[in-house]
Image 1 (spheres, rainbow, N blue to C red):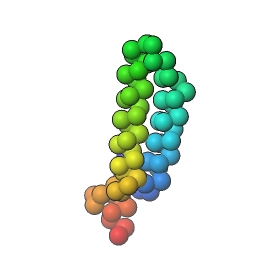
Image 2 (cartoon, helix red, strand yellow):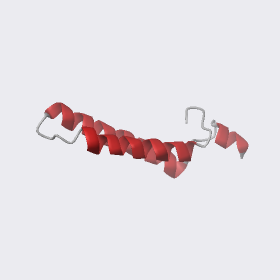
Image 3 (cartoon, rainbow, N blue to C red):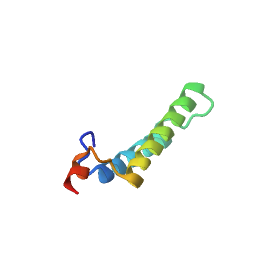
Length: 66
C-alpha cells in the first residue's frame, strides 16, 4: 500500500484487520488507555476506508498505470 500498488484492496484488508483488533483487544471501556486505543484504531480504519473510497492518488503505481 505504501507505493500505491493495489491500494484499494490492501487498504480494505488492513481496515478489516484493524477493526477486528479494536473489537477483540481494546473493548474494556472501564480502562481509559483501552478506550483511547479503541478510538485510535477506529480513526485508522476511517483513514484506510478513505483510501478504499478514493484510491491512492496520482503519484501511486495505480495512478501511473492509468
